[in-house]
Every structure is written in structure tokens, then in C-alpha cells.
Image (cartoon, rainbow, N blue to C red; front, top):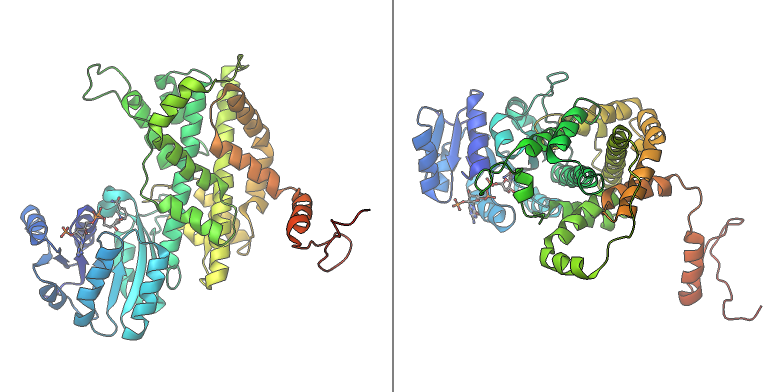
Length: 475
Ligand code: NBP
């Protein structure tokens, strides 16, 4: 019997996806460059419908036609190496899927390269980590629609199901690099969500002086309302956990973890692209910077001895009121981050002719992925009402929240700034709100400066055309 689909790469993601696919009744061919890994999978799962191969030729021969192959290898050169090995062995109409965390520029280049071969290529974002891969990830496949149709029956079965309506968290995203692009924005949004939660924690901890136990309770409570999401849920859980290996096992584990925030670069990619296509994406970008400055631990320790904190005390007010203000600031800032992320998706979609369905994207993020959250439904609803919505902030639900919560963000940002505790995400969010709703910005003066030193010309408020002012003539 031939396998229904093959998986290349038996590290944690490939192995778990292969097991997930097998558990839905499919036979799966498996292959890994280092054969020992394939053997190990077979040793642990000998009873499963897996067909192992030790050579790539054997692997290709083990698959039914048209062949469907999912690559789960390290992004970059390894992906090209696997494509190079597979290409001579594949036939027209076969479908090759790259499920790695690939930069969408690479996916577009591979699509162009494979275009003439007749082999279909799908760049697919996979979110949910190793557990998601095993139990149900959120999948973002982009490529030829006909190719998607060939793999859709499998992808629909292995993906997560939304708790609201049981719908599969997978959809055809669009042609070419659209799938990996959407995954990139998903990851950027994930950076933003994490940063905003971390800032809320920092204010509660280092401005208001709450205990870790108290904060665990607050996040747990928040998770029952509009902030209901995976990241709030795990934050509440993290704050209840005690040290497992240190000398004092009664200490919260967060207090033992070094404050150096690492990254694998996908947040940076979405910020880079925002700069490339000229979309303000300040909340996510501040989240990237926040990780970078956190990495400068030694410098910060030294600077903390030399640069003074603000003098004087801050007025915290009533505790219950403060907690609610921080909650509102967090939700408001999250909305700004998503408004920016979806604006970026819209502009990229227009630029590349991807025809992205924005409501559907929010829909497939409702389960399986790291940013899964109750409020994604509000995004879907907003685009259902108005598919050509330019910015989420102009939807009634978002407009209403922004109007109701803006004062809280201003209060919380002011409090943090006064106390000397950094809030780059919150500040970026309220600044974006104020810039976006500003009828007039000081770019008139900017244009005058540019015209003054570089004769770059300016436009006028009262007539059409480009003008240059005689700055160097006496008046
Ligand atoms: P890794 O990203 O650690 O990649 C290891 C796999 O790549 C192994 O199977 C390895 O084979 C193979 N490989 C390498 Br490295 N170079 C190769 C080459 N030149 N030719 C053939 N195979 C090569 O594995 P992972 O953490 O399972 O992730 C797989 C993909 O999924 C990555 O792109 C990752 O970014 C993405 N992803 C990961 C997560 C997550 O939560 N971890 C989530 C979503 C997506 P070997 O055994 O012979 O060295």
C-alpha cells in the first residue's frame, strides 16, 4: 500500500504532524536526512500506519500519485537542499508543501523557480508549537488553489477546531507567498500581545507593588472577560508556579528567570516588511525593540547604577480602579496592534494581488495558534459586515472600545512614565490612536524643512500642485 502523504523532517514538528495525520486515518510516508531519527520514530510508534524510508528515492516511491509531500525542516538553506533532492524525482502535478517558518520572500522566490516545472508549491504557516502540531495546529497555506484542493481534505482534518463553531482552523490563504506572509504577521501580533501583557505585569509589579500571587489572580480574572486568550491563560498559570530546581522552592519561578527576551527573528521580519511597504506598525515594532533592549542585560545593570530614576512618589489611587484601568489599557493597546497588523495585511494584499480574506484569517486563528483569543471573533464580524474595511478602528465595535478605554490608557501611560517604568507598547498604542484620528499632523512643518534644505517642494492646503518657496530670499 502506498502512503497518502509524505513528511520530510522527523524533528519535533515533522514527527508530531506525521502522527497527527496518521491519527486521522491516513498512511504517512516518513523520511529524515539522518536515518536514525526515522528509526526512532518507528521504534516508538511501530503500530502506526507509517511507511519509513532511508533514502529520498525510496520515500518518493512510497507515495501515491499525485504525490503530496510536507517538508518540516529548518527554514533557509535546508529547505532548498530538500527541494533540490526532491525535484528530479517528482512528476508534474505533485504538491510540495513547505511547513517551515520560512520568510515569504524565500517562498516567492521558490514559487518563481518551480513555476515552470509543473510541480505545485505551497508555503504553509504552521502555528501552535509542538503540541499544536500533534493535536491540531492553525494552518496558513498559500500557493496554487488547485494544489490546495489536493491537500485540503488532510489539512482540514489535522487542524485545530474553533470552540465557537467547530470550524477547521485552516483556509486557502492566497497565491504565492501569502501563507507565509500571514504567518509572519501572526507572529508579529504574537510579539505585540506578549509585550502588552508583560507591560501590564511590570506596572502591577514595579509601579503598584502587587505580589506575584495577586497578579496570578488578576490575570485569571481577566481571562474570563474580553481578554480571554491563550496568552493570558498561560500567564496566569506561570505566575502560580514555584521554582523547581533552586534552593528556595517557595519562590515564584518568574523571579528566577533572567530578564533577557530571546527571539527567532519572525517579529523582526514583520517590522521590516512594515517599513518596506510603509505601514505604521509601531506596537509590534516596539515589542521587537523591547526584546532587543532586554538582551542588553549587562549594559542595563551598569546604566541602572548611573542614570537616576524619577524623584518623588506616584499617586496610585484605589487598587480596584487601577487594576481595571490596566486591563482597559491592555485591551485598547491590543486592539491598536491588531488594527496595525490588519492594515499591513490589507496593503500587502493589494500590492501582491493576494485577495486576502481578512475575516477568514481571524477565524483560523481562533484555535490552535498562540494568539488564539475570544476577541478574534469581533475581527471576523467586522470584516463580515464590511469586507473592504480600511482599518479595524473604523468598525463600530472597535470604535466603541477605543472611545471607552482611551482615558485609561492615558492614565496608565502617564503613571508608568512618572514612575520611570517603561511602557513602549502602551505608549505606541495610544500614540497610534492619536495620530490616526488626527485631522492635522505637524508634517506641514516637516515639508517646509525638507523644501528649505533640499528643495523637495511641498503641496498647499488651498491649491493643487507642487511648490517651492524662496527660502533664501529676504522677505
Ligand atoms: P528544526 O527547525 O530544528 O529542523 C530540524 C530538521 O531539519 C531535521 O529533520 C534535520 O534533519 C532537518 N535538516 C537540516 Br537542520 N538540514 C537539512 C538538510 N540540509 N537536508 C535535509 N534536512 C535537513 O526542526 P523543528 O523544530 O521540528 O521545526 C521544523 C520547521 O518547522 C522549522 O522550519 C521551524 O521553524 C518550523 N516551525 C517550528 C515550530 C516550533 O514550535 N518548533 C512551530 C512552527 C513552525 P537531521 O535530523 O538530519 O539534522
